[in-house]
Amino acid sequence: MLCPFRKNRIPKKQTKGTPSRQSLWFVMFLFGIEGFLLQTVTSVNSYTNSLYATYLGATQAQIGVISSIPSLVSLVLLLPVGLAAERARSSRTIPVFLSFFMSVMYLLYAFVPQSSAHPIPWYFLLLGLTTGLVFTYNAQWQSFFADAISADQRNDIYTFRTRIGYPSTILVPLICGALVSSLAHAADKIFRFQCIYVVCSALLLIQGVVLLKIPFSPHRTTDKKRTLSSEIPEAVSEMLHSKAFMSFFVAIMLFYATWYIDYGCWYLAETLYGGMTELHLSWFSALFSLSQFLALGVFARLNHRRSVHFTILLGIAGLALCPLAVILSVHIQGSLRPWFFMALGILFNTTPACIPLCVVQMLLDAAPEKHRSLNISLYTMATCTLQMIMPYLGSRMYQAMGANQEAMVSFYTFVMLIRTAVMILFIFRYRRIKKELS
Image (cartoon, one colour):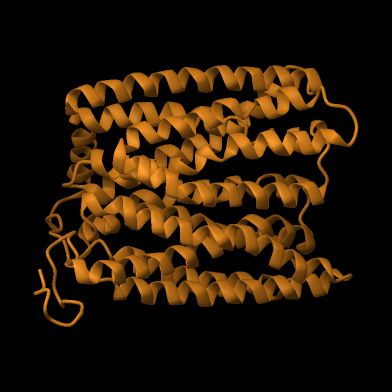
């Protein structure tokens, strides 16, 4: 700890996870910059990937699998990257490497139109090595964050990082839309997309530099002589024998299953049955992002006063009530329907802003420390698997029910019931944890 009478400066070495009080704001500032840069790139992905493929000549079938490619690449890479992180000198090494590697991949992604006469195969390859690597980066960043920041400081720093990133979720689609929608020719639109991806490449390069500036003392790594055949089973055994981790893992997997199940139907609910146009969709996205941004401070204070186990209940309750936007809006006639849908959607989508804030801290508290990087990679593989499977199952259920308005209402009634069941599970889990702590 630095003497309080000396000038503020960052010590060359610090105790693991405990930045001094004088350097805490500097550390928070650096994590905020890193979070803003990553969220900007992620927002670009969300808005541009499908449009980029469309103007490159992708078919509807090809566009339909775009959302699955990142999860597939993550499933392939998470385990080997997690093993590499276990052998790295510090938990910062892999996030920094991935930042620089993604910077190069985004530069190549920008030049897909010049790659060959048939650019779509190259598009899918580089889609996986850009958007797909973001999931892998997040898994290893969590391990680095746990080593760099002590448990009592994580809530404040992670909240700040999340809030700093929110403006980009509002502004990036508006800016990208303004840059592209004013052009008439596909070739001009593709050129604008290329410029956007070059900017993403530069942002990720800066992100890697920012990570290197965060004060951090390397953590003890595993024995590099260990073999993969013994290390992976040992990490899995640690997780299976950790009561805290398995309680968290089972509950969160059930939660994610009910969250992801309507991913393939929500857009149809908005447009076909909610009556939304492109204008409505852009306003809806901007307004509920704004409402989440404004609510983050409340959730951060609740984490301090109660706990993350209490705050997440509010997010799950919002998701459980969100199907009401679909179920009730179909009874509204005329031009009021999309606005009614938007009003309920914004209302119920505000509290889920707390979910990433809570889940990361719950994971870091529960994950066994010995093989933390590998454990987090295995956990992320499970969530990616659900993200691939559940939207497909949800879409199949909707199709089996008749693929009409009545089927959509029935499907979302089912979604509301299973999310309510998960909320009850988390309520019992919170009461048990509260009793144990008291």
